[in-house]
Image 1: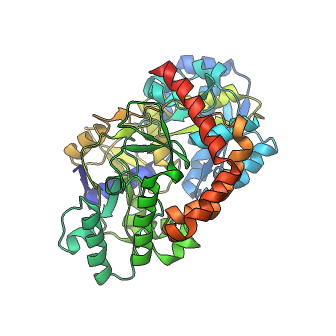
Image 2: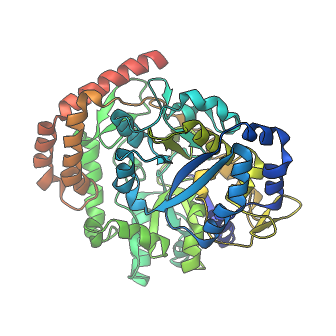
Image 3: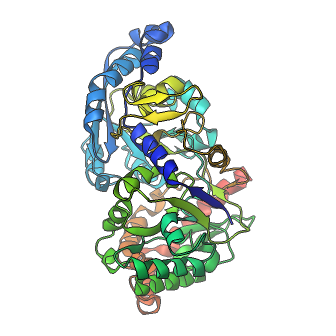
Length: 503
């Protein structure tokens, strides 16, 4: 069993990290990024002025507005002779909604992407090819793993630039629990599904107002309880068995493992571990977790502190810890990227966007600026480089910038936790599908239909909202009619061709 215990001091610490991204330029960063480097000034002076639009998701704070007009403005102007407008959209607009509208109407901007969204968007021709501009981001290339760049390539072309370098193996395979509640009911840890359900029962008896699981997807977290495979999902329809040294893909919704998993989730829904409102109001689950009204969630190496600021504001005594419900299977990694930025194909100056991305991971001084703010105003550093946060307003999301080579910790964070966090990926293996990106062009129509069936039938089954035996036969019929067999065959064909070249 792997275990990561994080005390309240750690939460407050990483409250700093979350808010850290909300700070602005520190004195040393301003010096470093402003008058410090004559070469940078000369380089920026040789560039024509540019205006960039960076879309971020979530709420914009007053501190963000202030720094965007002052220190951020000055540093970016000095470094790359550009003016950046930061626009904030609700998370509901990510990978769809207004983001898609901005792409379809030809707006000039850059924002986050994931691999699946990238593949779909490249097929539409709305992402710029950034390959010609990679040499303008030498610092980012040096501070972010090569596998992170490879993950966002299609046909040898770079369609998104990774930013961040944090441990990410076994994402969502651990369970993130409210350790304070665990201890309140006389337990110290959880290492199995039975213990997790016991934990819920005991807490629910004392705090019936709390919900159990703050999500509707637990296929990774519960892996040891429904399969002996080491499954890793390429998308909603395709999984790989990382324990098998072959190129065979798994049609997830046609597998016996899916049937077993769906049964577990339906049991949770009937038991109340997944609240009844989740069937019609899934976003409320995230809100309940953030406000301290949920007992557990799917975990990552960073989640004990990434969400700590929000929870500790609502429940000061909250403590979080990661546990794995089983042992013996190596952790799978997709590469080290935190996230990645695409640039719209309508952008007038995609090169300048890449230069801006480079600033985010250029050096410690600029990282401190974008992550923590102005030294003496937003934070202080002691002689050991430990951080104390003064201003807690959010700015750039911490998970976006987080780089284990630059991240600063508060004095209350134990050295052994820092060492464990930085070594989280030790022993992990890269997925055998890492670097493969499916070209959906031959089955674009089928994929569109399949996504519709997924939303209407498979997602409710997989979330436990409906009984597998009652709904699955019709769902499978719909999948087949939508072209599942053709889609699976095309995916297998492309993956086998790629696998043969890389193994």
